[in-house]
Length: 190
Image 1 (cartoon, rainbow, N blue to C red):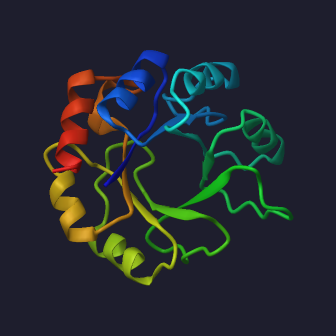
Image 2: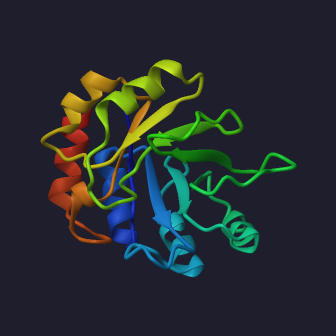
């Protein structure tokens, strides 16, 4: 099972998640309403904290094309976006589109993430997540309310390509709990 630890705000948390076996780290940029949003400079510092085999994901809810250009200038491996940007040319980064319950399944991206939580800890909708996995030709990532206690069961029920966790591994928004990171990754891989 692939695992993304999201909402990383400190390099030491990125390094710890990587050491525990996280496949990807997510950094929120250009999302001022998020308590996990960091500056582009801080995002670069966090991206630089991990090795070449850990995927770096820039997460944003921006609707600004200018912000998107600045995000792509950070050279993340992937961008996770909820705004329906249209790309004339395929960006250098992989594109992960966020979908909610009533959204159509996109095909103009590399993966989709079923997430109505946006880091709030709101539990995912089981029937919607299963439906997305069954109907999508693209990899589907599951997010929303995942914790070390429920992730293994969620994986068994939904069969996603990957899981994404933010609030389930925190002591406060953006402050990761290293014990929770290790326990979550162990549970997801069990």
